[in-house]
Image 1 (cartoon, helix red, strand yellow):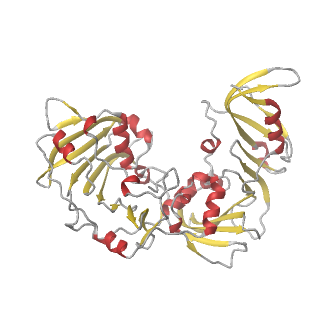
Image 2: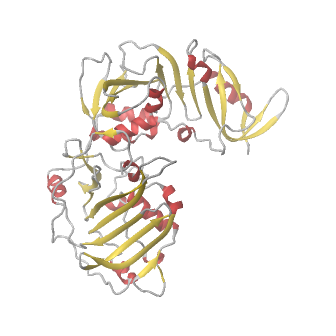
Image 3: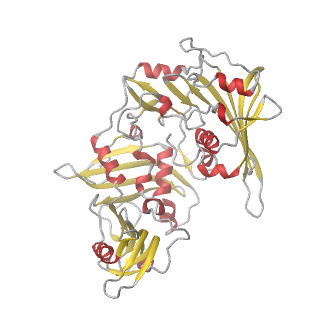
Length: 481
């Protein structure tokens, strides 16, 4: 799945993105799959009939009540979203509006299928298991919504069964590509035998406290096929292979150790004035501004101290720590000013710095998505390195969120309208082939004007704050040591 945000979130986007073109002619019959004779005499017999099925269609309708007014004067509008998930033994396809995708198995590899901004099929590199081996079935990559018969709670009516099992509910939520937090709003989840287009069918229905109702109908066992997908796969030998430079960029960011320059102007300049830095480290993060910048008083950082003990070697005083704690550097960021150990910086004892500060390593572009980038050249940008561009709206929206583009813009101007146009990646390596600098150039249409924003990252794998490192080595110990 490509979503770093749940699908339901995208229904209410206020920022416009370039839409994907939908896949046409999304169904055809095929006699190559084994047909299943489903027993609809009871919900249990129906579910038992389809255990292990690998060719079927799931038609889903989501009905949501969305507040299109304000918090003080709410105006609720019913939003209906319908889509299909097509499953076969060798590929799957979901025709979710503006976000169609699937998975395929070919050449001993499993890879993802998508449509690009022109509506053409593209595919990813191979998916691997935890041991680094190729997946061998699409069902290792997709969520199969068929519930296990053991989770059905049948009452007086043999055609209806409630499902209270948490794992079963989460599996269906993951199939929908909703976030896990949706589980807390679920008021009922049931399987039933009903009718669809005049035929008996198995249905899954989930309702939530916010008024959302989701119904999935199962059909076409053994006859499901998607003609356009099959035609594309006929011309594909195996998974895609990404450019080596892009893989180096992904590894650099996934290492969670790099520095970002804070430029005086957010927009691109040939020789930008740097007024601060953001230091990313697995154990700490710091955002600092050099004087006389007005942002200097806001310079602050957080250090991860999970289940640690502070011990002063001179006085012997100690304190038990658990969480992330605030610290500050001196004005020029060349020495440690203070670490505030009175209490964790956040209300819980969360200490994972990557999650706390939403590091760029969490961007969706690193996870089987480089097929959305293509080589590019633009002499207007005086930057060294290999240049790539993407127009994919999901990747751009994800970058907008994680790079905190909105906060950066709001620091200098208001946002009346914002259209995400394209995202350019420029990666520079040294003579040894090691990653040195990555620039992102984000083209947007802000309040009707074309703007190119610049984000510069460097010092991959070598970013440290020596004074903080020395403090950690001197005063911090494992609590169980």
